[in-house]
Image 1 (tube, rainbow over the protein chains, first blue to last red):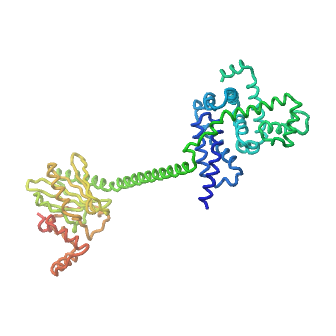
Image 2 (cartoon, chains in turn purple, yellow; image 1 turned 90 degrees about the vertical axis):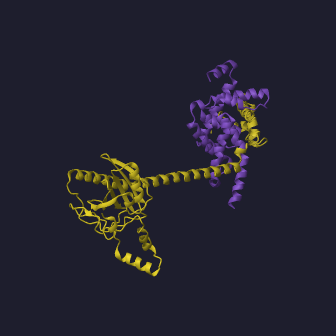
Image 3 (cartoon, one colour; image 1 turned 90 degrees about the horizontal axis):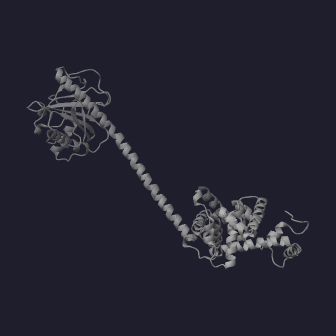
Length: 175
Length: 317
């Protein structure tokens, strides 16, 4: 019985791994570190799989675990080992069209300028099919705080992406 | 909920849900938002920008999402890795325990060796006292109790005969001393003390006041030996003493407590000090006469009658 439950759990987890990898890549900036992060998260999840039943949707449970693991690792990581804009740009899809690619690069660059709380909230809501309530639980903040962060973050992104090219270039060099 | 204008029906959250694609196209709420935005170009532009941000982010990480999963992220593989790591940790823990146990054993071994070292120090002190007494010609200070049942090794094959034996004044445990001499007048002093735990013989050496002392444990006793001999000759004497068997220094019929205080003269070796308790000997004699094979302690006692062990009458000078 336990073995079957575990197999079922493993199967459900496997379906969520692409989502976890995508969010992890957006958070840390490169795929190798992102996969390390996902692996650590999965290890914890597989160890605590019996606890999942009381925590609602599996995706939210896994994302909360991933985000906590990310925060723990970020605290331990030296400043020089932090993510860089170049990391993130390098990870952007090469398959996307030229116009989309430029737009994506611009958005990522703007995202890098945001505070961590706003960035992680926008990424979670933009990339994943997750409600505001669930996102607030994943990030461990009240829903009102999350809404406020998302609104301010999106507005900052918008201002940056709509700014004239010269202003963007100066921001990039400051970065 | 934040309201950005005076429209009662449409909230900021509705607009964000519309930008995020969370509203069902064709639904009443979806249509209401579109109607609302149609008359507000600035809001429309803002929400369109938000939607564009979402599309840009999806495009940026599209290939990560579509990538095939690396093997190391497979739950089965992770479970196997965790199991293997747990086994390694257990093995490491077991090895650490083994090292710890070895350390404890070594510490205990060192601790157990301490009585032997103390015995050697006492023997060295007694040796120095004997040397001083020899130089001054004063009588030796020994205990009053006679070592009536100590069996001393026979060193006659090496040219030494026992001239005296005595119980040394002791505060901790009994210690006995025998003095052997050869025709040239060279002396060998042997100290022996009972030790409750049997150990493999391991030779140790110390030098005190210019005199070398060899000491060891064997057959339930501690020994210390010093002689005015060459190194080689001394080794022969040590070997002969060790070869007297498992327990040549049987001390029987005498309590292990400290000796009564006060000086006493050394006892001569010709006073029957090598004798074993009579009942056992009687039994041995009877067994031999009857052709019975001696058992247990009797068998050990019989071994003590080896050629190296002379009866007291033979040994005493």
